Image 1 (tube, one colour):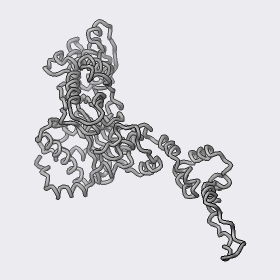
Image 2 (cartoon, helix red, strand yellow; image 1 turned 90 degrees about the vertical axis):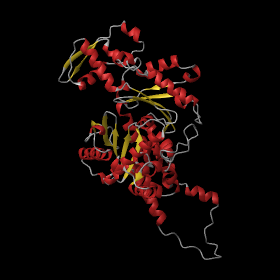
Image 3 (cartoon, rainbow, N blue to C red; image 1 turned 60 degrees about the vertical axis):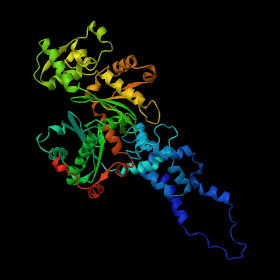
Image 4 (tube, rainbow, N blue to C red; image 1 turned 120 degrees about the vertical axis):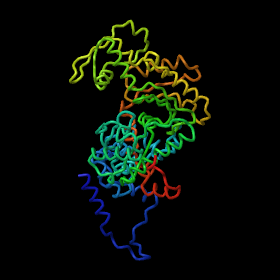
Length: 484
């Protein structure tokens, strides 16, 4: 009935009116004052009797397509149908969580090199109608998270990664050039996804590598990234976005600055990030305890109790189901911590002190026979470097420590790390620190990429097009990617 009346009013406006009176005639209509003309332009006609909140509710029921069409009726309809609250309502009904949408459009829409509203509450008024329209036409994107141990890949429009496999360092001959290995890896991903590379953009999650702040390391990082671009554009991918893994994990937690503690497959990295940029000049700390070391140490502890298990995959599954981080290691030794779990195809396994001794090597590496820095000491060293740096801005940017990586999901790790840091650091650094668990578990970096891929300005602000890359090659000279 509402639509019938709306389009009826459109037809009535389009109908020919009475012929104008000749000049000088007194039969002409009295001209309306400007105020009356303005009030008339805000009239809904027969619907003026309907309360505005009821009309707004009807627009919600009509949905975004019909609500957008109603803006063509008249000025009053345009005002009602362009209301920010209406389009915020439509965005809330979408697949993306509302808080992530607001964060992405406020902090990430300008691209990777610009976060102008990072430390201010007076964020600009967003036009949710415009954002809804732009997000509706953002193309679906393939996301490839090449982690240090396992790769996650899938569509940006899906709720989670659709596939997992060994990371690209395990693809192809290790003696082959990097270009050939990456080409083999991406070809395998596209084959598994059953899509042509030329049909959609791709986001590549870059694992941490060459973390030193030296000219050689900077050149290696640049060459590695440009090799990925070259491989994908040679496969006719239309647009590529490559972002560091730690940065994407931070985005997934709705932050652009902080310290990311990434427990990778072989090593653990402590990465300071300011306004979406890895601060190599401050220093990325790397320690030798990774997920593989934790799994291997658990296997050793199990063998000491004559619990045999041939497969490391089975041991990893037991670690994920039973292991945790003790808040107080000495106190935990005096408790009864026995628990059991079942592994498909392997039967039941029962652990006791092994449940918390496994992760204790993160803080006491000597227990695992390693001469390395404890995790809490590496984070404290990074925070001290951040405190002494000359970064301009909020001096508390480094006091949020975000955990990422599969082994960072162990229960009790955030609380234990925060406790150790408060004991280790002076009050002027430790005051206000907060250790945050992975917002999306093992897939945090993938979800950070998903957030970028759905932002309204994704293709313009975040992607490198094939034409742009070729122009850069012609301008800066050829890249020796095939020989690297």
